[in-house]
Image (cartoon, rainbow, N blue to C red):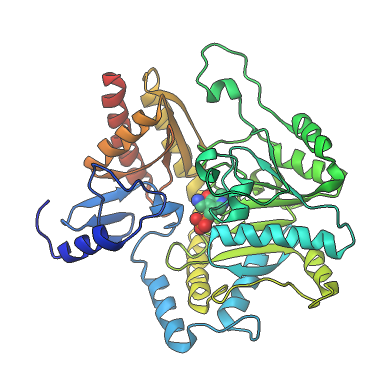
Length: 443
Ligand code: PMP
């Protein structure tokens, strides 16, 4: 490793920093990033990489975006934050109004949190407390797809099926039910030559009946499963879930932490199925909301859900919140990000560029033995490889060639900043294809 200006920080990192979701013993040196501009990031040796993963899917408007930086600096100087339990602040109020305008489905009240996990946690508590306050005290069960990911906090992992995320952290809270993921199990297992069967509302209705649908408080789903391997449910799935929820008095919660704010080609991922007429009862957004410039999550609910909390016997309001939830500088960042997302119609761009990338990947990868499937919606694209090892090898090879992609299990996730040009996205995808050919040829 060449000596760089950042060597003291590298030593500090290896001596003191505990990296989340990361093996402690690893042979590959950790990438050390020092700056970013547009869709590229630079490491401590001065090498530049095209970021096809938008950091952690959050850098939606790219790096070094002056309009966001200025908004943060202005707000930090003026009033960095104050406790929203006690006071109002301009950026939080204006952002809540702005989010309501993005949700023509009648979602009009927003509670702010700091991270996706906190947002999901708050949404689940709101759903359960709503039923409790309105006299339906038996409704406590939360149902979610087994392969979904809903955050790292205790309720988040209880709602998440993967043993990798749960084991050893128990006892987990009760009242969680894992529904069959809307994906063909034989395809997921890589079985050759079978008839596909995707679980749907019939299975879910039966699973709810087994615990008693009258006990179910909420169904919590991602419009496209992100961490679970970019699983795209069949068209109409959310509409069917909406109807299921209405049949049984269950609240529908859309976890749009990854899909929200343009990623899937719509401002909110659920709009693919549900349009403007109807929507979930609660939606959680986070990653793209402040574009990675500041921590922020929004939990946005229907007005009547909000109003019900006036009857809470202890407070006459929501007994939940965080010191920095709705931090004024985070909200100022989000307002500047939304100016860009809306002003440059980034959802439409995500749809168009995403289609072009998927088409190129499908054409270039046909017949590659290391590739099982190319899928996705908008700029949330998954390339399912034949094994976890193959995906990791491809990500490492692509990084060596100057392109960053993320490997989740056997699936490579391609999810660049939404501001990426089609030419850059296609060039980056070609590097990934080359890496897949190198790995496919080697296996
Ligand atoms: N829900 C979904 C759908 C996510 O993708 C994530 C993060 N990957 C979370 C929740 C948790 O968000 P955070 O990491 O900000 O806590």
